[in-house]
Image (cartoon, rainbow, N blue to C red):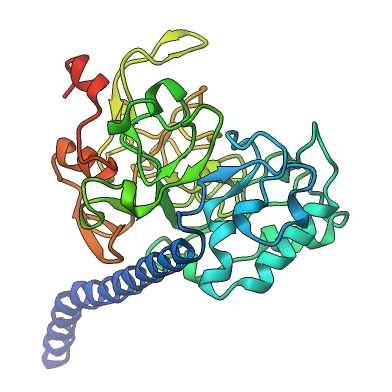
Length: 354
């Protein structure tokens, strides 16, 4: 009887202790993620010091692109506005996160890819054929992975026969509404620090002086949950459409099936709610996953900040600081933090959604 009592007491103590241990482990993981967001902020400031602007969120590479030394000059003669199977802001940031050899290897690999309409595509990189790019795209970069987002993470494959692109958990801020629409991006209140399509067909990172709301009030980077299936772009570190966030899209944006409804999403918006799920460029979602459920993409992809931390996400601000944003933040406050001007997206306001 005494032995049973002792066992019961031990069981109660373990039951009481286990949640505390789990909470302590998550606190340590969150602290590591916070530190990594801070490192990315420092890297972006160093990039800005060198180039007087932030890196573009995504570009295609022209025929002469790989011959240039400076990331800002690697655009070549190709159209710079598209992100179709093209490099992300993280590729340009590699030398500033102690990954210069990987950056050099990437541009060596670009030279090996076949040219398609005067530009190169990751989807043309084949395992065992384009050996340098094969190695680069598969590379897991520890500073880009948050330990809270664990589990099997297959690389994104643009095609079934393509080299898989490894995952990351950090994304750039491309504004409060639709970054892929030049019409939306013509409105200054919608644009973020990473501008994809304004002027039309032009991708760039802004100079800090353009952030009129103040760098301490504007989000540069945020956490995302990386997809787990090869058909889903989210978190593909080298791919422009894999590592961005925005506030959603507004009423009236038309796709192939006509006008779309309002979708403006707060951080960690519960994706089981159809109005709060992501629409990434390519999607292969788990139906019951509140983080990774998504809708099939159309011409204007959008996705919000997400994390596996209880209660919110880490974001890096323009002044280099890191703050934890609650999942319950008011949508209007969140959208203002995504905008360079600190204003709500005017067209969404005019449509009566905000």
